[in-house]
Image (cartoon, rainbow, N blue to C red):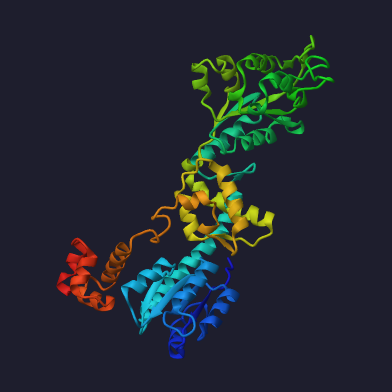
Length: 458
């Protein structure tokens, strides 16, 4: 698999530091570019779209923090590492809050720099390969236009395949936005009726006084406004499949006539004494609990059993989260093509928000969200800011990273990471952090096994 060559840009007004970085990273299969002027470095970033950017914190003209802010605003998928000889907890906290992935002290620890770059490159390569594999997997997991690899969806696909050649009636159940019409179309395409028409009737959208006319047709003069004979959806669908969406909204009076039409394959136009034969396969769909409606006498039991001879249940998106990466890939590809925009995927932050979201609107909500995000995206990747407002409102401290965590907590997290890096040595940790041991103990909070293990080295 030929993946695009990755690149790194180092921005530092110290030419010796740039030479050191370039020499240290020679071993990696990566293009390393350098810039002593931060404005020139930013232009190189915009032009080359590197995977990693190393930025010195203290530079004339633009500070490293300003460079970080501009890079993250322009392309949040770039990993930015700040470097400084003037370490402080406050600047480290600020850098992490603004999107830096690491903060290195000068003089640079070459092995630590190499280890960090190596991890970032490995992660970037994994993401590239995963994107390619997702595209291949998406085709393998596509069933009659429906995408899924979760056990619940594979079970639904298997049932559709078995039922399609033989069904006369089928009931598709599931919450709004789960793809019930797509299942109906799959049943149609795999059935012997594929050469006939596929007709959609939304039962919830028909005024109650027009239900019978819509379903079975009417003759001229049968009611006020009936100026000519008109066929209903049963006649239009004869020889094919009729999809009755939101069947639970059908009035009880119409249900009895529907049952007769389904059982006998004959209809009677409103105002006509004669019967007309039809040959229709019925797929009904609902987001209601029809069994509960039967108990409440709001849906005919005999009609329910006739329609539910075969029932295909669609799970909510929240129950099939393993399908989310494939669906994201599918909708990003679709809308980038529709809008003519080179959107390749989502940032890790945006993916984290979508994974944690509860998806009350299911796949339809996901489709609308990605369609909106593709319109709003200004770079090759969708970020959190590109998502609809409701996703940003629901972004918790966990999903947004540490932006919503108190400064004190960020300091504690950073101090513990530095302590871990130095194997529990509190003296060295305090020196690096530039704080007293008393302040370090306060930052670390309650004594833990990890910190206790380092007492002998303190």
